[in-house]
Image 1 (cartoon, helix red, strand yellow):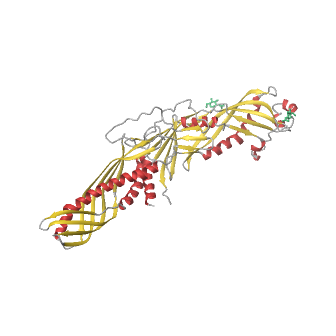
Image 2 (cartoon, rainbow, N blue to C red):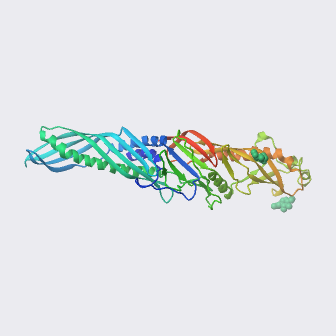
Image 3 (cartoon, helix red, strand yellow):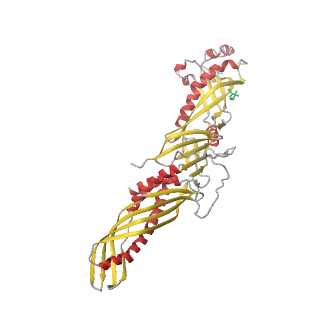
Length: 492
Ligand SMILES: *[C@@H]1O[C@H](CO)[C@@H](O)[C@H](O)[C@H]1NC(C)=O
Ligand SMILES: *[C@@H]1O[C@H](CO)[C@@H](O)[C@H](O)[C@H]1NC(C)=O
């Protein structure tokens, strides 16, 4: 249970940490990535502070469980001679970390400074002196003014997951006060000169050992819950692998991710590169996500490649309240030949995108002009399809983007649809006459269908048990920025 709760606390800390550069303090390594990220996660100081708070509460509990082994030794005591001492049943009662701070250090990582920490320790003492005399009792030790400094460095492993480790740890204990039961005045001096300093050394190394182990076992495990490959559905995956080690600046920790959708069946090279993505210096939310137009355009390619950008309109897909009959008798009002060739037959449209849509993001929002082929068929009495005509549809589509339950969700709105006739098996006709009909068909079937999918959304790259609140969406040239505060949900 302790391990789990530590993992949780560390996890929050890790959230912040996940974004630092994995370099040793002292070395300055410029991170240059061959390509721009398709997706950026930024943890601001507010986010680091939140994670830190959670992490420290866990570390505090963990340190209070420090196991200290028995201590024994020999010492010379003035007027007494050689004394053999033993300390046993050492038990830490608590460990308080009242003043702590986390600071991102540019190109290094994160520094955690803990000051004025204090702890209390109980144990039994036993001494043997003058060859035969013995005495024993109990003691209580107050360790005060403990300073702990921890450097955490972040990196990425071969799978693109973040890594974290303690690159440096130091502990300084400047005050130890001991209270012991017993009648021997020289015992106090023995404690003071020998035992205190031994205990101090042991504690100093134990604390750093414990920190390093917790970072390794709990924090590292937690930050590796970053979903670097998210499965969207049976056909589409989303690659959130780090393209560079997390990078610390003086204000934040930035994570550069690939941010690329791909077809699970056949992933291929994306025919364009991500544009530069420089998040503005906003800092009032704990975390910001930058999603490049690359991110969305690779989604379009992946869905297109997976054959998912196909949609059929039949009478059954049209909502009843639209009151539209999809048959040749209705369409013969615009295409008189239909009446004669295919009288009173149901129809269907097969919509498909000949190429993947390509969208642009600017300060005004997301927009694109997809081109859709709409093949019309008459459904013959024996159920086979007779091709009627092929339209090319285009229109201005705008998207509204939001964040819900840790996912990017959206909805589309289409303006007036422009039609052109690409092919016809029923002779020529005035295609503009179909304008209103097609607009109604598209906005009552295809758009709700797409919006239902977009409403399920795409997962943001979040560590386990992280919830977002207070979200905002802003648009910039070539990317959109999502801001949010974070809530870490400890395990029940
Ligand atoms: C369906 O009917 C049409 C015309 O009546 C005919 O040309 C076609 O071969 C038929 N298809 C099948 C599968 O029977
Ligand atoms: C789309 O918008 C642009 C500019 O806003 C406009 O010039 C164009 O005609 C629009 N296209 C359609 C099909 O409405």
